[in-house]
Length: 626
Image 1 (cartoon, rainbow, N blue to C red):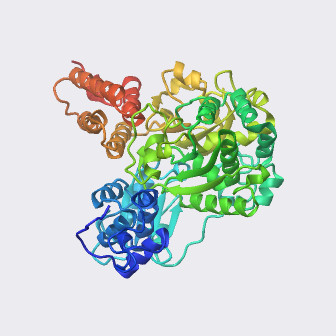
Image 2: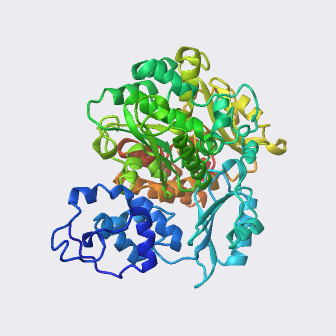
Image 3: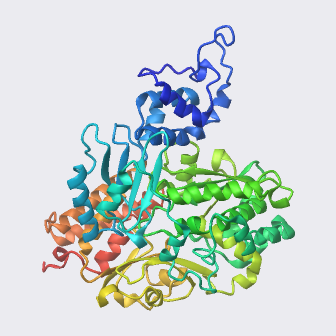
């Protein structure tokens, strides 16, 4: 289309930043100089070809944000010309993600996690210190070199307080800080470069590191994640070699025999999903690794990517080989800069070694991987919202059916698996599906990663065979810190379920948690001791879902707001009408969101709060005599 955009023209610097992602503009129709003799009034770039570049919108927005600290209108309009995207659509995409700013802000910004995993006295002290040094959150003085703002969960729940520091400029930097203090944040905000966290630091997040019994975490904290040859000496890419020997159909049979259930929360049989994609006649097939774990309390995928990126790549390569996918995307949440850098280096090393490319590892078939970075949107963990995000659209879920296995990325058959699921695949191929299925239980096979955080002695990522009880896993983490009692345990994350200390004998399996009325979800086990203000925790969960709702469907858009309002009334002891009326209203809101929301966000937005009210009684007003 011929876009007539009204607004400021891009500066030379803005133009150069966008061209660094999209390449130089070769036509006036795409933002270049007018050449009437060469072009006249005919576009050299066909409309279909221009529209096919729409998926570069998110990378271009990232580049501008990282260069200037915000997205100037001139740069946005230039992106629109280059990609033939209407400005209203580009604005809608840019404002969808909380890591992008459409208004000027300081070059250096500290994003301080104040979600349920980091809340407490240490975070309060950190925020007070930053306010004293830099001013109120989100309100930096004009011309200030640095500012700070509160953030939802940053995926570092095992080592909070967590802070993400972004510094814009010609050489942009993004740094995740663990166990942050006011002084460490101010130092990171300074122009002086900060060293990247060494891989040995992973040992602190994996208390079992070095144990010979580990499968998924066996190399984490023990083998340098940047050393491909060290990883290969430790067994990397042996699973892919066996997959090639078995052939695509044989590989799918092994995965099916393993009874591997998806580890992203939905627990769909992996073999069935692979078979469905492989049987689709339409071409091409696409592979997407979902690394956008934004569930508060979840950090397993981050540790796998930071600690063993080659296992993730090998799992993707096996999946691509088995299902006929020649190209894969790994969609990494924007709050994971170190994971993205380590995956980038791993991809480059694998390409250089011939493990990725036109003849992947000598298999005779092509397979390559490309990274896409999210920009702060919980909803993009939903597979169709993630697909829309990759395509350069707002990250809003699609109606299903059709499912991605039939019509996913660019309308083609698409396999979507999360990081932990794919990290299991090499081990399955090395051991054989039937042998691998011998670990765990009949309905929940293999090992499982649990993100243990909160009031425990040793928070971190734990690998155990399916079937261990909740109490046994918490015992691995040293039990409750300070010898205090347990007030509540959140199982499955903010979209999961609260249980009380009477559920310590609950088996941590899909069937065991289901029988107990809980959900295993993404493997979160967040412990709250008897000093916890549980009402405050529920209020933060309600705020989280209100903020993260994409707003596409009415039940979720309105329901999450009404839920937060109701929780605020209960917390202040000012119900509308009687306690029974508030109970009935909350039940109606929860049921409407469950039954009518498009995706899992709305369907589970009330789950944790509903379970807490039913079992843990956090609001005295509901228990008052009527």
